Image (cartoon, rainbow, N blue to C red; front, side, top):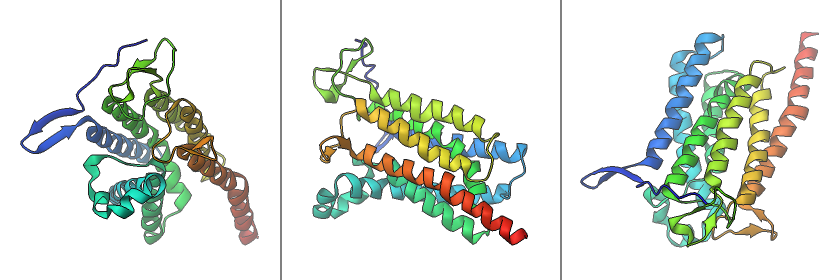
Amino acid sequence: MLPYPNIDPVIFRIGPFAMRWYGLMYVFGFVSSYLLSAYQLKKKAFTLTRAQLDDLYFYLILGLIIGARLGYVIFYNLNFYLENPLEVFVLWHGGMSFHGGLIGSFLAGYIFIKRKKLRFFSVADLIIPTCPPGLMFGRIGNFINGELFGKPSDVPWSMIFPQGGNIPRHPSQLYEAFLEGFLLFIILWIYKNHKKREGDVFAAFLVLYGIFRIICEIFRVPDLPVGYILGFLSMGQALSIVMIIVGLLIKFVYLPRADQHIERLRK
């Protein structure tokens, strides 16, 4: 068993203001994504200009935050928030959903891209490989908070989390940081240079993230009060299955049909 580092979630306080590691991880995620996207614009021609990239990130960040919060409210604790609607706005009490953030940023990005008359999958393939580092930082933030910990375990690297009782557990946050963050970034960053068509990278992200999340959820305590769906699926796994299906449909149904449609127009 390894000792849990027990890092103070608050970096510093100035009066009522508190700078927390979790919030800083969000900043790291946004900044790393933006810098990686800007780097790609310099290296390769895209339909997006630097000014449009700046505006797009405003939309994406706003959509992600709103979507992540509403996703948590709807997917994980709807009854509580129906009884306490003002708690929806109390973000410092915690409660953000990756899948909700994905939907929110997708909708915000889609609106922006259509308004600017850009090609959606061209822009999506530019942005999506830059997202995993942000996911990695977010899971590190969960680890520092001592939340979203794993199931009881006797593996040599198990830890006792302050909020998890006096029981060694899987550090599942670190599993997610590695698979959904580091490894997924490496795969997508390489794959983007070998894709066959626009949209391939976006589809790959949906499928691979879904697979990695399902694996990690095996070791993670299911989110309360939802628990397990059908007695064996966590909410995270159920939503990830939907992600995988959507990714496969884009890759093997929508994109080939779009190619065929373009070919017919050329003839």
